[in-house]
Length: 419
Image (cartoon, rainbow, N blue to C red; front, top):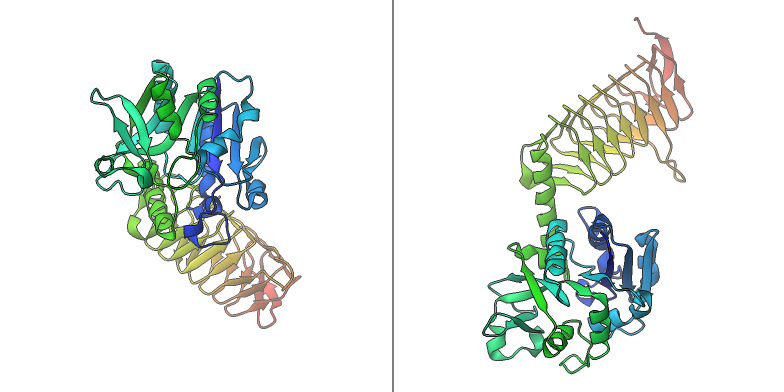
């Protein structure tokens, strides 16, 4: 988006999470919560994304990726001080600055677009996002004049009795004119109960200077939820999970029981696929068209499932590819496996992919029939239309030739399969 730069506030310790992991790195539906905010900034075409870090900043830097500017807030003196830390990065810039919080994964891109559009149409110094809630405890109240104009944002700890009854709250997403923002930041003072510099004090400064302030109200009060506790994290996970499931159902995927289906972000599923109850599908999974997955199926990250595949009761797939029309209906595990088309994986089949030092590859070529309770000790290869007998153990380094039958413990090649 032309003349837009973004600041993401992510320096806090998140002490209420009671975790050694920085709060913003806790995953929500398979993705660190800050990544949702970064994705919004990127999708808007922000010319620069500046992330303000403090607590355990070296750990957070590793997941930010290329093209992200990092500013370290040396002392955690509040959101206003965090913005002030970015001043050098914005010297000479006259465009708009979008300010978002790194712990708000429920924020919608569409809402942020409306915020920016309103800001540019109104040509105000600041436009910020609000919502109305029945219980505003813990949130900054939006205080308006008799005429309806915004006067100040009053933080919860500093609100008076009458101000505490205000239902309209600050969500924590702002769009500023850059020069107005950094000029006002210089004037804020820590005159509050926490003795911190609040970005919200900029609103009162704008009011005193007769600079325009606008708001956009979202009807979805969940958008403004900041993640502060494990309970908040679980709630956000539930909201995002429902959004993900709704998306798939609108795209032609049947989900028989959304209440017991867990699908991470960054999953792709083809049309007319059915997801049965108690199924877990992790991030970076690709599933084709007309598949049946579950019940009680677990597909781990970085797996790819072809078209017309059936994966039934108590099956698990990890870092594996499965070809079209393959059947895997009962009690089986594929780990680091490359499975071809029209393969039958019998009940109780296990790929023993870990040798204590590394994960090894199992290759099963097109048309193979892997008998029930076969143990496949990787690395190994099962050829086209080959058969493994029920209960056999294929030892590491073995190649079962095309069309052959392997039986026994350890398995031996018994004969050629009739074609």
